[in-house]
Length: 230
Image 1 (tube, rainbow, N blue to C red):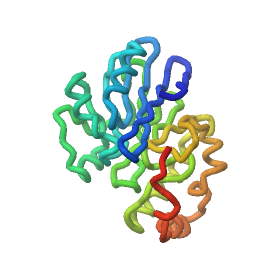
Image 2 (image 1 turned 135 degrees about the vertical axis):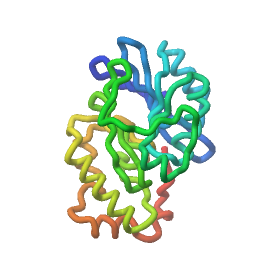
Image 3 (image 1 turned 90 degrees about the vertical axis):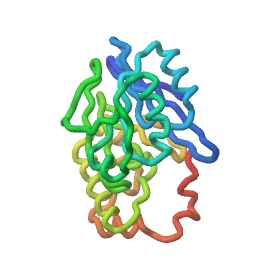
């Protein structure tokens, strides 16, 4: 468990999860008044999640999924069943993935609340057709859309174009004072200010979709340790 972030009546607990050589981040988002909580992209280490719920004395009220890849939802259904809470995913991602769970709910609103946590979904396709980011109290949970140091892989040219437009959308909507909580890290701690990400992330510096796509789809990326998450 890494350093937590507090913002008014909200706390973000950062959970670093490991499965073999795969490292990714889950986030427990807590309404510090009601002690109600959400978890973003739960995967790999159930014991670590349950300890976080216990040690922070919170009630899990829902599961937010940014996209349907296994390393972002492999604990969604077990948690949903155990705590009888909804799993939220974009309708586009449900259609793309054919993911099923008894408590799965497609996102139908521009925003909704759990306790005092106001959840604002932002559809950001590219890595998958239904990728979604969540804004909660000035914190942006980006899954594999945006990392501090880069952005997620895309399967083809059209997806690269989608990713470019999604990143442009985030640039237009997200406050520079917001904090970015991605699904993976190459070394920078989750919770970087968006202003710093804007300055240092090369994928946010392209001016047109074609140059972005050429760079995102460049050859021999595997040789640069693109899966060397930390």
